[in-house]
Amino acid sequence: YNAADRQLREELAGFYLRHRAANIANINGIVQKYRGRFVSQLWVELARRYRMAAAEVVDLLSGTMYLSSPFEYSQDEGQRIEELLRGLEMGSPEERAELLGGLMETDECRAASATIEQRTLVLRMLCFRGLGGVAESEALRPRVWMVLLGHLPLERQSDWDTILAEKRLEYVSLRNEVLLVTNSHQVKMVDGHRSERFGLQQMLKDVDRTRPECDDFRRPAVRAALGALLFVYAQRNPDSQYVQGMHEVAAVLFHVFSVEPKAAEADTFWCFSALMRDCMDNLAPAVEATPHPVGPGAAAPAPSAASAAVEQKLRVYEPELARHLQTHGFPTSAFTFRWCGLLFAQEASLPNLVRLWDSFLGDPRRFDFVVCLCLAVLLSTREALLCISEPEASAEILRAAPRRGDLENLLKQAWAICALERRNQTPPFPMRTAKQAFQDLSGWAAPRVQELGAAAARVIEGQV
Image 1: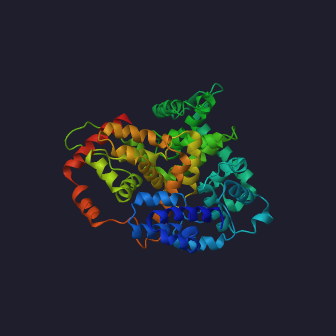
Image 2: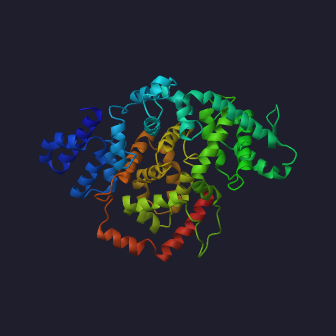
Image 3: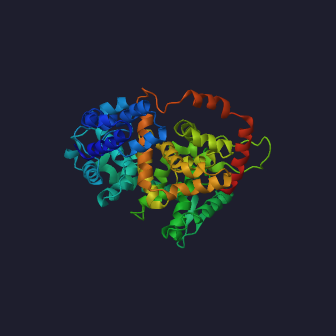
């Protein structure tokens, strides 16, 4: 048995003591049958047999995950990946650091022993599980993020220094076409672009409010760099343009790439541009929504696809909580629209954000994992939310939730949800009783509740 096997064995022993002590004699065989990527299937089958709530299954699975198994892939993909990666261990930070060091080795002979597909898969899995905890892994994080965002091609590893030098010079040229940054770190428009002065001023105001708790972001040089790259992005992407909130997203990238201070602005620009191509659909609704007067018939803004997915999953994983919030006129979209759109960039400290973004960027279904994390945050507040009925009090709980909980435990919960969602849905999970199905039909679309939810959403969004 490895450490993960022993953890599963211990959890099963406690489970069967509570439910069916006679089965303790079968634990070894159960562990052998379901170890690795099949552990989620084990807990689903036990949930059906012993009628466990979905949230309880998430708790049990979160404590028995096999980090060396590709649980973030579907079971069909996982089988193929396990064959490709057979023999690799990544259960501990030290094992992951050793793998990452070899993977990022620029020795052509060593790199040739693995295909680009294998190396990309391992890189994603390592990043998804987190690059923190070991100094060697953290030092490689900037390059790993650049690879996963498409800025550095893994197949041209020996050319990375050349590619970076060229892209950094290209950015300086793009910036000089529209902006002048003085020696005192003043950002000014060049002739021919002065009509867009208002847009630049808005960006610089937003940048001035970025991460006030962080010394680096109070430095004039950093503020000028962040404002300049956002303006250049807006000039290069007239269809999407700049929207408030982008400065928070860019700040996370800038923080990671600032290990090379002179190049941080250019590296952030290119990686931020790539990131926006992937998540702009969720970002725009999150930051453009503005409060409207509360009154009869007021309609809440349409949630992003990710935010809507969170609400749907809450209804099936924790129907009691979903009904409670809906009954009392508190739509979770008042928060999840921002969590999803900004990738939690306003909700956590920078060190915690960097850890979360490891998983977001390593997710093979780019940013789908943020939905799992949102649901994990909501489940973590279940007991507190069920005790209150005032929307304002619910808002206070959710506002504090991402910062209040233990990050590693929250990630384990999100990983468990991810594994449950991406397994082959045979049998389906979570299961709905006939009573739940009836309540879905009779309760969710009640006009009065919808009206209350829309009015509350406007008040809460204004406060947020």
